[in-house]
Amino acid sequence: MARNLKTLEAKGFVSRRQQGTDRRYKYLYLTPKARELQDTMEEILRKWVDVLVQGVDEVTLGPALQLMHQVADNAAEADIAALNPTKEMKP
Image (cartoon, rainbow, N blue to C red; front, side, top):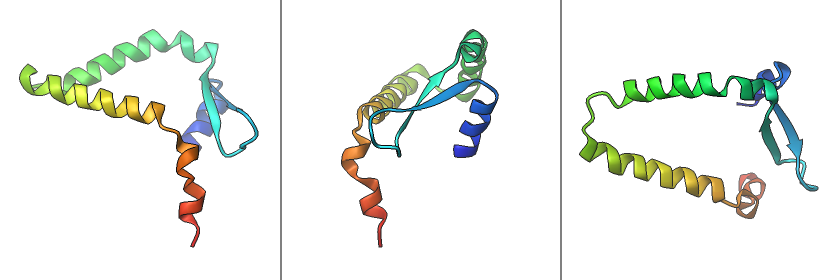
């Protein structure tokens, strides 16, 4: 993933900035160049989702999407620093 982010940054699509004093955590921001492609990328994503859910009925799809949204919301709100991942990885 780090290589992909470096590529996107080198091509001018994202910028990484540090927040606070903890240099391990960086925030990603879309650049104006990336925002120009946003509508195109959203259309591609919509088409891809249509391919992925082809043949899945609404009764099954609704709860599945609801679950995925909840998981994504939980990930967005998670306090990663509080988990202290570097402490867990030490032998």
